[in-house]
Length: 476
Image 1 (tube, one colour):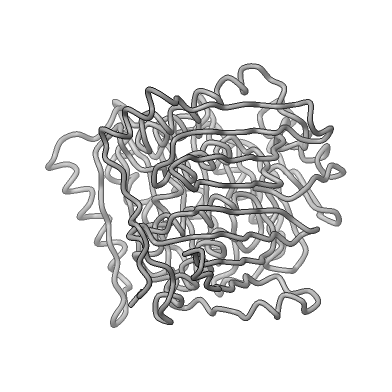
Image 2 (spheres, one colour):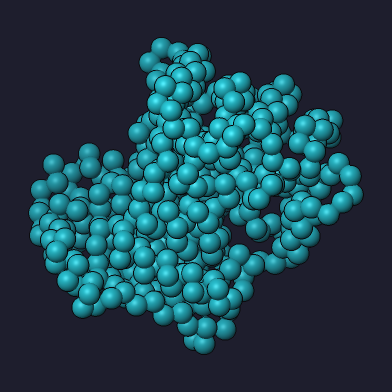
């Protein structure tokens, strides 16, 4: 048990409303203090989850957070972010600045459902008007291909799909609508039929002791933020159980890129102190704070920075119920939860950036070609942007090892999609994670296109060429 108990973190809702009226949230965006980044300062009355909601806003805009300082003692939240856009530039666009101010204030005034709605609406293909299928199970080659094929047979049009794999677990959230007429799937009997067919596919190859789950949700304005929901699904599926907690001293070994977590007690101040060292990558801060929030811990103070390719995070936390980490079992639970949250987003394999004319069955055709060529999908994030389907797909071989570029296979993919693919071939280090907007030194980029014409693929290619010599500080 967690023995030391301090004042629980709870505030009367009516008191929160009164504090909000007296002290509305303030967002200050400063472009004068530092020459190479924008300083974003947020002052607000505190509540559980407010830090995650604010970081969520910034990461969904693909902003790079190089440093952050957090303090929330005494019922007041004060945070400072050092941010740039994905190209390493300051934030100067007035429309973007206004959106950030509105979104950060909304996260305090109206809570997580409003924030998730604003952020999801800004992401490709995600809408509160689409039916969502949440699927978890044991990872195996061809699983996504079979899922997309069944949806085509059922007349469902996929508008967006996000999937992660970690250890032996897989989780995906697929947004869909009626294929012929569009709009959400509202008929309860049809929803039940679609769910039953998906369950048959996911359960088909389950071995002894393996479980899976399929859940269809109707359109809802209060739907949880997609990537936060993926973290919840992966944790519920038990992907953290295989995570090994590493001693922090191992980080000094040359070339080590694993995640290292150390927990210490500061009983005189009533905090547990968590120090994390890991390979830096996009959305690292979001994933870490998401894990702490889901584990019901409150961050009172924090400092996040980077040193080369290594990110350092330090958090002073206390359980929402007022306890600090006193027991070994609870420490182990938090350690495994943090390591899993940090490592599950790291996608392995060859990254393909997709751009094609959207149509019913597009993802089914693409994933079928991969499956027929002995390839497996380790992660996918594809959605619609107008009439185009855009996003990224990571492919490996059936054993989850890296693969070489096969021109014939790519030709087959191109015939299926009728668009363009940007191929990002990274070094052999499986933990070398780059963002969708940055290409590390030594990375070889090749573009394969069905015919020379202007498309979003052309634009993506020009951006990748520009980014190949553009490097900035640590990602968020």
